[in-house]
Amino acid sequence: MAVVDAPSAPSARPARPATLPDRTAGHIESPGSGPGGVGTRPAQVSGKIPASGPRDPTLRRRASASPGGAARRDVFVDAVRALATLAVLSVHWLMPEATWDGERLGIGNALSHGGAWTLTWVLQVLPLLFFAAGASAAYQLWRTGTAGRPDGAAHLPTARRQGVVTAGWDVVRRRLPRIWRPVAAFVGTWAAAVLVLPTLGVPQEAVRQVARIAPQLLWFLGVYLLLLAVTPALLRAYRAWGWRLVVIAVAAPLLVDALRFGAGVDQVAVVNVLLGWAVPYVLGIAYVDLVRRDALPSRRALWLTAAAALAAMAGLVVAGPYPLSLIGMPGDAISNLGPPTALAVTHAVLQVSVALAVRDAVVRWAQGRGAVLVSWVAARSMTLYLWHLTAMFVVIGVVLLGVGSPLPVAWSADWWASRPLWFGAAALVLGALATVFGRFEAPVTRVAGPGTAWTAEPAGCAPVSSEGRAPSTAAGAASRPARARAAAPAAP
Image (tube, rainbow, N blue to C red; front, side):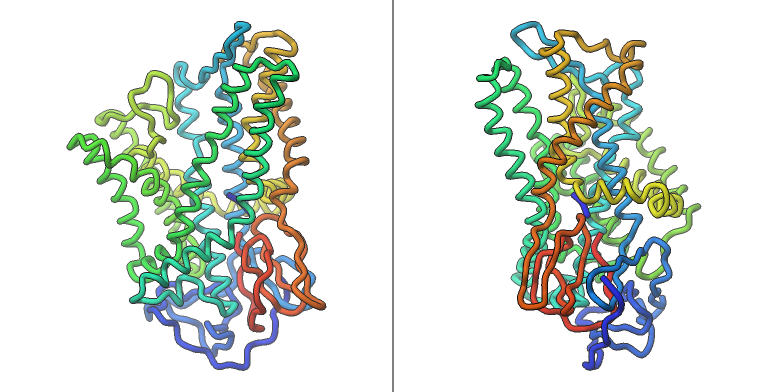
């Protein structure tokens, strides 16, 4: 989920042509730099649109220990990931209605009352997390491709399926260290807690119930890994089809819903677990292409798209079988998230459109007052995501079992008055958990040889060593030497 230096000397080798039509040739790199590190003219996109240089204000330079070279990070992607992570925390911390009768822990959903479903249309921001994930993966693949290694986009074989599979596994392999270590710590800790907490006097039934809920967040990581694995194929398809791939990505889950609800073929619904979240993921890939070509849609076009998506959502709710809430609620016949429905897909288009429409304002905030917050969240986003429900249940346990006081009734005056204390307590516990478990998310310092070392970097940072070696992951894991060349963008 997640998160350099001055230009090195140009390669002496002449530029070599791309192996596929350069539909996304507007690289974020120094003007005149080509695939081989040397270029004499700007790249052309399909022979029409000139490639953009590093003019985009969202591309932030980061210094590193290397004496020369500069990489640019897309501050917008960093900020979207950070804000979406905080929104996920907020909506989950708003939801619990918990009671304890001495034997059983009852857990309800405060958002199931009255018009509280409207909050899910704002705070259910999983589409933005997948959008940021798609953009980050696309940046990473392009960056590693410019370092001379196959990137799954410009160098994917056109005939051999094995080439796509191999490239997909390489993408997953690079990202795995930032995933499996925090997940292993989370699962191991909860496995131990189930055994230890009852011996400390915590009711066993309450422990078991909470232990069934807290790990439910792991579904996100499974879908994320699947999308990572197919990213090289998606990039190749986007280079070949352009925005037609976006149309196909949006249409596919809508067709599944038509079969599910129109033809009664319920069995097909499961494929939307991947197809539904592929929509914002593909939009993230398309975003990277548009940034590199300096061809982002106008704010007017984006707001019109958002308005059309909102109108479509209203129509789906009125005419279709979809519940109002974008989060599964007690009593609803179906959930709009399990698996994603047409309403959730349309909502993804709405959220991405709005995010891009306010992109300039987000970047100004992220480069100013929000810089510290964005950096802090980016360095531990996986830890915050995994442990925020645990932090919430710790607070619930202290109130219900420790203090022996019931939680206030949802949306009552006492409930509103207690929200600052509630969020503050949950944030305090989560901060402590992040301090303890954040070390599992930080990349491990590795030494690759005499005079070459990598240090732990924040999530998504792409350092370059003093000998010009490029890391094989956005988190800084060591890889083989990279050819000296113009700066490549760091993967957000």
